[in-house]
Image (cartoon, rainbow, N blue to C red):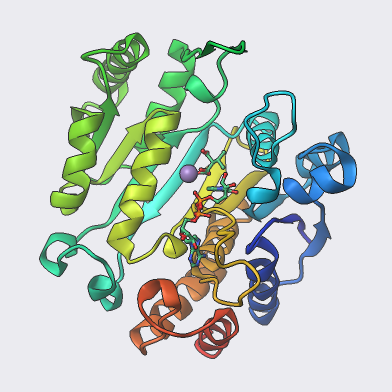
Length: 343
Ligand code: NAD
Ligand code: IPM
Ligand code: MN
């Protein structure tokens, strides 16, 4: 039976990068059954909520979920009683139990000079950010009055251990655990649990602990030194956007969000809905193409097809394809054609 994929184009540039991705998947000869759902702001407009029960149930029953991006100025509000597109994303991650967010950062030699960082700094970088995705300050209790607000940051031993296990298994050389153990209590538990798991099960992998402020600096001064970075939800969010600079643009960075075996994974670019360029045809579709590759690899066990997309992207860029975010003038359409012709 054909694998069933739920498509969530979302908002802003989301639909503009989703359509070419399906074109690419079809050109590969795949025969998936697609079911598209409104999500984020588009779902708020139609149903009053960013994620309907029906969409969540459809995602739970699918083989994989492919999401573009949500959000935009139309739904921006500081009023906690109003729905926000981003709540859909958080609800989906939590609802599917997707605690492990993998964000590979593999700058292509062809794009070294598209980065604001020096080529010598980037050279040799090939790292993976393993971001905890269903805990921490994102999901703790929130309070709000007219004059005060709070967000609780909580982690359990079990939540830390399962994400650390993902990181150790993915490591080739080293795991760098990033925390703020000099100040934050959850970070102190984090460090203890990672240390204990390492000693008990992964003593053959090198482990280092570094503080998040230092990590932010090392990431752009000495990125090739990292292999796997494992960190909590919010630190991972911030560090991965920073790491995107190494690849030339946030428009290059894909991600996979995984839960327990048997649960469908969620595959989405790291970038957002880019409202500033939505509707202009200028969006870089590469992060979405590469997220589809991660879906083929991690969600559907189609390694050859995943590798085919990745090498078509590499070749198109090596031939000189540059969208505007990479300093060129190609639009989404041209970028899609260039990748298709290399497939
Ligand atoms: P953003 O990632 O949307 O955009 C940041 C900058 O990068 C913008 O200048 C944008 O034009 C550029 N950019 C991003 N993706 C690009 C692409 N594919 N091609 C070319 N340029 C690209 O971040 P933001 O502006 O902080 O957020 C906009 C909205 O997106 C917000 O509502 C935010 O909550 C939401 N958001 C959603 C997701 C998601 O759905 N996973 C992720 C991040 C942000
Ligand atoms: C991301 C985004 C989301 C996050 C937002 C939109 C909720 O920034 O996927 O990186 O913070 O996780
Ligand atoms: Mn983010």
